[in-house]
Amino acid sequence: MLGLSDCMVLWEYVPEWKLHQAECQALASLAEDKKKLLTPTLRLIVRLLLRRKLQDEQVIPTSATDNYNLVNVLESHINDIDEKQLVLFAQMANLVKLVLPLLEIDIREVTHNFSKLACNAHTICDDELRPLGTGLYPVISIINHSCMPNSVLMFEGRVAYVRALVPLPKDTEVLISYIETAATTTRRQNDLKQYFFTCMCPRCMKVFKSFKLPSLNSLSILSLIFFLSFFYILLPHIKNSDEGLKEDAILEGYRCKDMKCNGYLLPDSEEKVFTCQLCGFIRDGKEIKMVASEVTLLSENASSCLSSGKYSEASALYKTIEQLQQKLYHPFSIYLLQTYETLLKIFMELKDWEEALAYCRLTIPIYQRIYPAIHPMTGLQFYTCGKLEWLLERTEDALRSFTKATDILQITHGTRTPFMRELISKLEEVKAEISFKLSGGDY
Image (cartoon, rainbow, N blue to C red):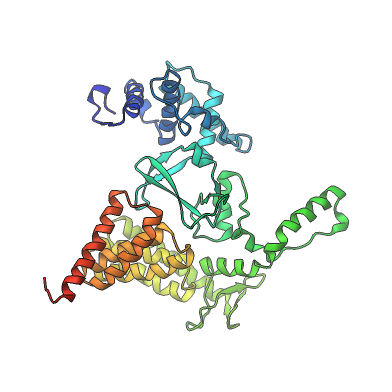
């Protein structure tokens, strides 16, 4: 950690410089052993309290979207967290007091703030969705979640933007996703537990296939009224339950043993046999578990090779895994997608552009299946595909990929960032190259 006089951070925006100055002074005075305790979350709380102090003293301005009152109204769910987590937050609050000894610190308030961060903070990502850090954006935190969002949260530096993915009529609620949506309903609901609510979006409501009525005679009058009210809410969605089961089975379930059939399997009550819902072919549960165990064992070895930088060995192992998974999982399985993505990264490291392109192309149909038509992940994958195609001098393929990438990413990313300007520049350059070749020229 640098002393303030040695700090090399430059700020064009004066209020941010003043905040950084205050933070740097506080951190520079800490002993080295205390600096090791500064987690990113703790640093964020320190900045939050310093920002409030400077705004109270009118050293830096406040605005409708930047003032501490917005933090006060955020839900902390402090009563919902377990005792161990509560103790941890209180200990972190005492660390904040240690970092800011000259500031009057309310331990209870700071403990609540740590709890607020846990369920309201956002991961700040770059244009290619690589995580950079964590930030608290109180206005954005009040936007509700849906597993079928109509908007997306993106960042340009530290500035957050919410962009509509589809035209939104007047009075339409803006909805974003708090989690990765390429997952089964069970996995999504589990990921949402940190936010202390159960998602009841149309996608999640498709899972009520085995909805069983309780014995109405055993219910009290109040329980009966509650049950009937809840059932009335669920009724329109129960008819979609087969569709929800199909979606989950495709994402994480097994494929038909007939490789010509794209059906999905559902198990019997004991998972002894799995039946294809398209052709009726039955697959033995023991055979499935045996192949799955082999995949797990190979995956451990492959991951070890990859983490050691043994890319050639890792590629061979992951290709074997791919072959087994193609027999085991549905073609649109997220497990198969993860293997394709891993092989893409490996061949990029090996600079084997042909193989990298082959696996990049394999991912795109799955992306298009598991994400909505306009989604940044799909757009970025088309961009990667285009760059590889251009590198391999497949200009017309690159034009198609860059065009698709631009069509998606100009909606999710806007057009002002250096990243988007670079993409649009590449698109124009490819167009010019094709036009030149068509005119009879040659490079």
